[in-house]
Structures are given as C-alpha cells and as structure tokens.
Image (cartoon, rainbow, N blue to C red; front, side, top):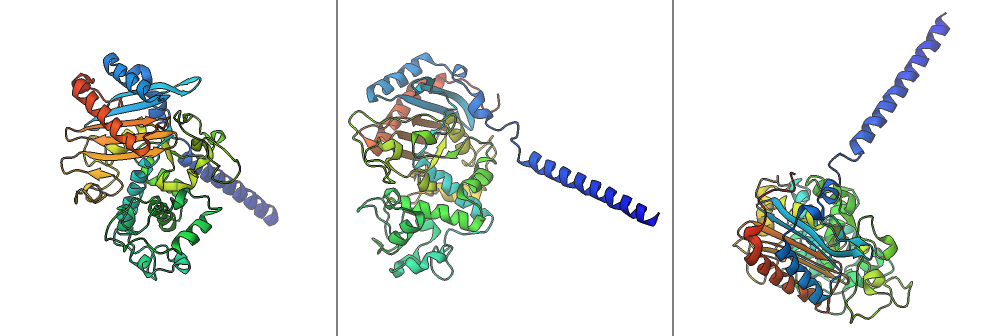
Length: 410
C-alpha cells in the first residue's frame, strides 16, 4: 500500500512538474511572441492615407530629374505623423509605400548612438570611458595595438569622429578583409592619423567599434540589443540589419539601383569579378552600426519622435541623454550620432550608399522630414544637399496645407 501510494505521489509530482514546465514554456513563448502592435506602422500606414497632389507632383518631378526609382517620405510636426507616402517603385512590380524598408546607410550611426546612450543610462559606460588599455572596454584587442595614442580614445571620441582614424587610404570597414578579426588586427596595428580629441575625421570604423562596445557590455549581439533596448521601446519592429546581395533582401524591403553612369566593381568577398556596387560591392551587413540598418521612413520618423526630448511621443532617452546628443559645440564638431545640431533646433542626419540616399532633418518649428531613396546618384553623399533643398521647397509651399492629425495614433 505504501509503495502504491509512493508511486501515485511520484506520478502526481511528474504531472505537476510537466504542467509547470508546459506553463513556463508557454509563458515564455507568450512573452516573446509578436505583440499585436508589431509591424503595424509599416503595414497600416499606406499610400492612400496621404495625398496632396501639388506637393506629390513636386516630389515626382524631383525623382524624374534625378532618375530615382523610388522614394519614401514622412513628415512629422511636434511628434505627430502628418504625412507619409511612397513614390515610384520599390522594385519592378511593387509600388513604394511609407512602410517599405530601405537601407539607411549612415543614418544607422544615429541609431547606434542611441544604443550607446541607453548603456550610459544603465551606468554600463560613460562618454569618457576608455576604449582600450587596462581599464578599456575593448581591452581584449590591446595585443594588436602598436601606437600608444589608442589608449587615449574614449567612447565620446568614437561618437564624435575624433578618435584618430582616417579613410584616406581607403575605408577599412568597406575594404575586402576576410573576417572581422583580420580587420581589427590590421587597423589597430596601424598608427593613428592624429591624437584623439585634437581634431575630427569622419570614420565608419569608429562606429563599428561602438557596435562591438554595445555587444561587449550588453552580453548580446548588437542587433538583438538594438531591437530590445531601442526599437521595441519606441514601438518600432521593422528595423533589420541589411544583407549584401539581392537574395539577402528582407521581406518588405526595396530593391536598390545604381545611377546610369555607375560602373561595376569586384565583390567585397571575392566571389564575383563584377557586381553592381549596391549588391556585393561593400560588406554592408558587416558594418553593423556604422551603416548596416534597414528601416522605413515612418518608423525612422517614430524613432526621431522618441529621442527629441519633446512630446507627445514618450522618449526612450532621459532628458540628460537627449541634451548630450544634441548639444551644439561649434561648426567643426560632430554631435553625438547626428551630423549637426544647431542651437535653433535644426538637427541633421544623412546617409549615402551605392543604391541608397537618406536624410533626416528636424526644424525649429517642430517639423521633422524623413526622405529615403532606393537609387544612388552621381553626386554621392553630396546629394543630401539637394534633398535638403527639396525639403525647404516643400516646407515653404505646402507646410500649411499638411493635415492636422497623427497617423501614429490613428
């Protein structure tokens, strides 16, 4: 009897344990399952929600002049999404929409800077934290270093492009290194071009190091950290790191096109003798936070609304962090993540890759304009000036005609 009772007890215990395991697994799955809001911005905000024929005609004319296949545009005012529309084609069979995702090129640096500020708010780093040396965040790479000036580099130097790196002999991030380890070994064994903090020179390599810092301190892959700590809190779920080839394109992502005068080049990984540079010419996915993100115009506008220190969209950064990112020093000093932040409230972040042009601008009157194209032009990164001129034209002529509403909430 006692034995039978003991066996019955074990059976009940096993059943209870199985229930608990099942419940725990189910609870975990429910926690990680897609929430109802997931991807709703990219899916719900469609072209038929925004129409201002005269303004749309100006955008169409701009596209025709520059031979752009597709453009996505989003306009906010005081954190409210007023207008969002896609123009032209995402590919031969698909119209561009406000929710089409595109490569963001160096606009990715702004997103990475937000990730760094999130770590600072968790007190896992500070802007003056050393990157290398005995107390450095990335001191596991010290064995590669031959120039003691590396030990002067701080997180802020990387954010402001003041760490001493140069691309005058070619951009190391987009050079054909066989692995990240080899890239780091080669670059860190070189002498710095200048003493950190004494001047500035734009550097993709610095933002690649910031991506590795995020991984090191968070204990998570860079992309996973950004999804959890930046995009999800901002209620944006369509951001993905880009692939390098056409077959790596994400669902809902645009195709990319070169301008008519572009010439083919060898693929970065040696697989092909000649490729369109937008598909295999550079290791875009390997650039991580320097230029690797894809996202839509509407979700990018939502991110800006979440880091501007204003309402009604709740910020994902503390006011102190927003102020640090947007503080103005002088015309010759990069802001944190932004290209430029004027004291008036005009903030700028641009991005340019083969096949991609992007520009984000906020203005003193509270408007934010986001433009992303799937076509490069012969002007390269200088094309941002033409997009900025388009913004000024549209703002002067049509800002007062934009509807008073909030597509983020509707």
